[in-house]
Image 1 (cartoon, helix red, strand yellow):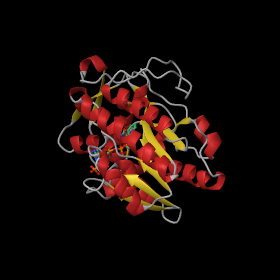
Image 2: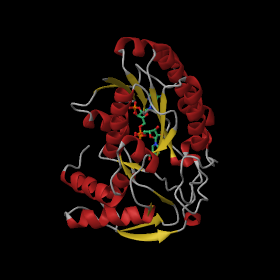
Image 3: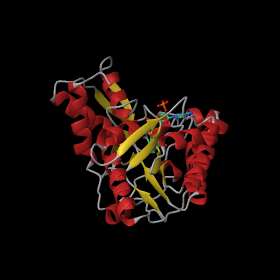
Image 4: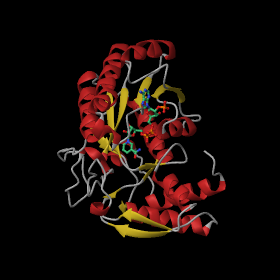
Length: 294
Ligand SMILES: NC(=O)c1ccc[n+]([C@@H]2O[C@H](COP(=O)([O-])OP(=O)(O)OC[C@H]3O[C@@H](n4cnc5c(N)ncnc54)[C@H](OP(=O)(O)O)[C@@H]3O)[C@@H](O)[C@H]2O)c1
C-alpha cells in the first residue's frame, strides 16, 4: 500500500516514515511541491505519486500565532483539507485527516468521547473543526482522528523545549492546571498504520470520528517533572519545576483546562492502544539524551 503523507518535517509525517517499514510505502510531500497555501499544487502531486491513501498530517500548528492570522489558519486547516478530500474522492482513494483535542472547550470532568459536543475556543480549534467537517463532506471514505499533546524526537515540541531550557536555567515555571494526554508521535503513527491496514483488509473505513492519544492524564507540570526525572536519571539536563496556574502564564490562545481524550473506540475498532504516556515519554527522553541533535 502506498500512502502519501502531507508535510516532510512534521512530527507525525516523519514518524509515519520511520514506523512504516514493511507495512506500507510512505511518500512524504511538502512545500514547495505540495503547499497548503496553494491548493493548485495538490492535483499534480496526487497524479505523480498515485497513492492508495492520503494521510493529511500537514497543518498550521502555531496555536498562539493563529489568533493573529485566522485567514491563514482556515486556509491551511480547513480549505486545504477540503480540496484534498475532493481530489481523493475523485481519485477513488481514502483520506485520513488528523485533528485535535483543542476542538473541545475543556470543561468536561471526564475524558471526552467522540460523541461529545465540540466547542473550540481558539482559532486553531475552530479551523481544525472546520477541516474535519470539510473532509467528512468531501470524501465518504475518510478517517478523522483527533490526537493531543504530540511529542517526539522530531521538530519542536514540549519535551524538547523543556530539555533545551534546562541546559541554561535551574528553575522553570510550568502550568499545572491544564490536563491532557501526552502522545508520542511514533505511537500515533503505529495506530494510524494499524487503521490503514484495517482499511486494506475491510475495503473501507468505518465512517466515523476517533480519538487516539497516549494513555493516562497529565498536566504540563506533570509532564515537565517526568521529563526532568528521567533526564536526570540518565545524566541529562534537569531543572526544578514550579507549578503555576494558567492565569500566571497568559497566552494569546486560551487552552482547554481538561482535554483528556478517551481512545476506547479506536482501540476496539482497530485493535490498537497507544502506550502509557509515562513510559513513552521516558523512552523518548532517554533516546534524546543519547542522541541530542535531531
Ligand atoms: N503537535 C501537537 O501537539 C498536536 C496536537 C493535536 C493535534 N495535532 C495535529 O496533528 C497533525 C500533525 O501535527 P505535527 O505535530 O506533526 O505538526 P508539526 O510538527 O507542527 O508539523 C506541521 C507540518 O505541516 C506542514 N506545513 C505547514 N505549513 C504548510 C504549508 N503551507 N504547506 C505544506 N505543508 C505545511 C509542515 O511542513 P514543513 O515540513 O514544510 O515544515 C510540517 O510538516 C496536525 O494536523 C496537527 O494539527 C498536533
